[in-house]
Picture 1: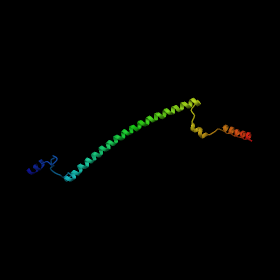
Picture 2 (picture 1 turned 180 degrees about the vertical axis):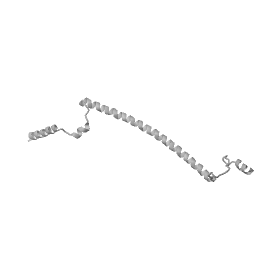
Picture 3 (picture 1 turned 135 degrees about the horizontal axis):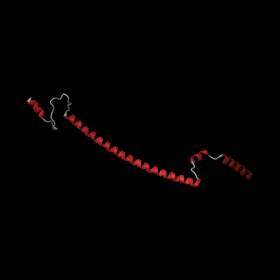
Picture 4 (picture 1 turned 90 degrees about the horizontal axis):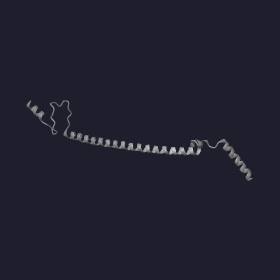
Length: 124
């Protein structure tokens, strides 16, 4: 028993005592333990790097969102100015896309044909 007490009181190189039984323990050689410690350091560095990248991504996202809000305000301002000019010129809002698609009205086409006929008659 005296030998067992001496083993239990004996510390390893890290300052830990050995347990009475190693039945539920995992044993590593010194080299394996050093490899595990080194891998843990690598993982800690990698985690810190990923955290800093995530923080930078959050900052970049906030900047982009701020820029988008500013650009949206500029677009709204220009749209409002455009609509004001249309109201001053035409008295109401005119959808320019529908004007381009619709083309000239039948009355305009008839008048253009009459003008062309009159022009041809006057030339001959």
